[in-house]
Image (cartoon, rainbow, N blue to C red):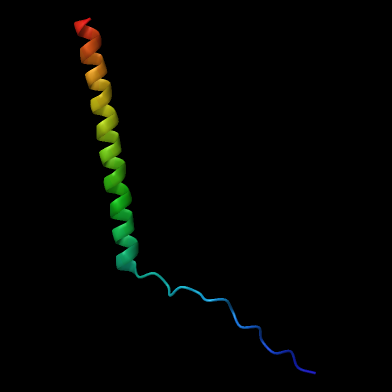
Length: 52
C-alpha cells in the first residue's frame, strides 16, 4: 500500500531581494515622514503655547 503525496496548496514564488529592499525603503520613508510630522506637530503646539 503506497501513500500518494498530497499536492501542496498554491505557494507564491519566493520574493526577490529587490522587492524586499523596495519594501524596506518604503517602510523607512513612511517612518521618517511620520516622525517628522509628529515633531512638527509638537513644535507647533510649543509655539502656540508660548504665544498664549
